[in-house]
Image (cartoon, rainbow, N blue to C red; front, side, top):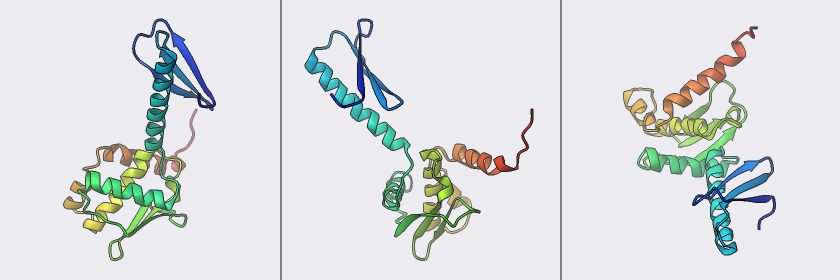
Length: 171
């Protein structure tokens, strides 16, 4: 049994196995009818799925992860047509979320995005990848960007973040 895993057996639970994080502990809920071998198999399977979901929801931490993420996003939403030579975090970008230099296919993502949801970072990466294919913000560019399904949601999120420092507290 992995450390920090608590297994809870339930007579009411018939088939499903589920898991969730509670602080630094993982709680796994299993039907009480499972044999010890079945339980161990199901625990390993559900922990692997939980880790995969968490990995997908985390924004990339290093430049290598950013480049890998960009390549996956390019293949998924831009048919692999956008191929950056580098994608890196940039601490000196304070007025924009990302930037792209199509001539050398480099992309910089503002460190201000660290800590934001992965789907917001993904939107900024797709936006910059689209600039590798179309440098201006014309209709073709926006058609490319809008292939990312959370474009409007991410844009709204970023607009809210940008506006928040200017809002006055009320109440």
